Image 1 (tube, rainbow, N blue to C red):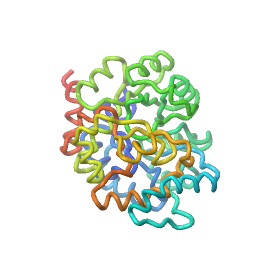
Image 2: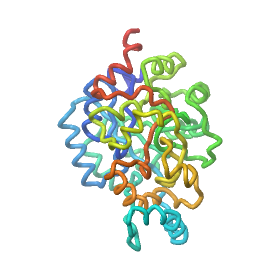
Image 3: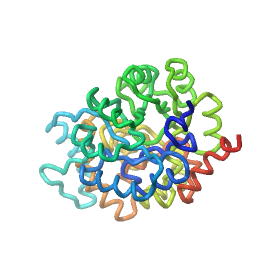
Image 4: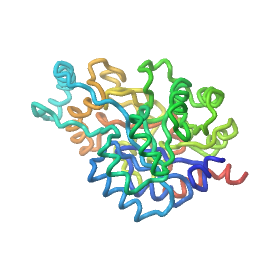
Amino acid sequence: MTLAELLAVDLPLIQAPMAGFQGVDMASAVSNAGALGSLPCATLSTASMRSELTALRGKTGRPFNVNFFCHANPTADPEREAAWRLLLSPYLKEYGIVLPETPAAALRRPFDSEAADALEPFKPAVVSFHFGLPPADLLARVKSWGSKVLSSATTVEEASWLEARGVDAIIAQGSEAGGHRGMFLSKDLTTQVGTFALLPQILNAVTLPVIAAGGIADAKGVAAAMTMGAAGVQVGTAYLLCPEATTSVPHRGALKSSTAAHTALTNLFSGRPARGIMNRLMRELGPINGTVPEFPLAAGALAPLRAKAESAGVGDFSPLWSGQNASGCREIPAAIMTQTLTQRIQAR
């Protein structure tokens, strides 16, 4: 069975779920174009998730993917939080921001029974996870709906772990990929390798379909991954300039400039390693900083600073997520981008 048959789509392409940078418009456009559109739900409340899923069902009758995080919520660490606020204090002073005693927590919810209750009436064709998998009972519940389950692996060990727990396909996330690393068995960044080094190793280790992700930004990259044995590809960065994306003005400007060529893995914006375009905060504090609170607590104190800078058209304190290859970004509708990315494999 091909990936397209497994997912009941026409094209073996998944639009990467990009929490905070896209929603229903992007997901429906990609699904209607014959690929698998994705709706990120990790930053949505239960009520918002129901609303978004209802809207998505109204915009497409095609299969779509609903994505969740599987992190463990950390224990609050007041000392570390205070140190983080102190580190940010020069920037807060620069923008005239006084943080409340307890900053608002950033919503990054792991998949739980409440989310499953909200999701069950929709029985989406595909449910994908980042940072591993939910507990076995919740995973079994998702599979009982007939939903296909995908999850990200950044190492061979993670891929084997996922296969042993019953996923239907594995996303091989190379280190070039933009946004959060899906790593969950180790925090060691030296384990992270490039897509075209990771892909054949995972293919040799598992029997499941493997989807290549990271650094794939055009039709040549899609075809190359498929030639190497990938069952399909997942693409995110190339969609960030599409009109359906909710990418901010400073972020769009960075993607269109020469600065997009310089990305780094950073924990500054959330507490977990994620790849984004270098900006002022990353340069001055270092992309990886041990003061940063555990995921997702880091984002709370940073949120007002980010908002005020963005309102002035500045992305110095924003997560400018991008893969190492932003050359495929185009200001074209997501449906056309989908067709452009797959034109070589369609020609075959």
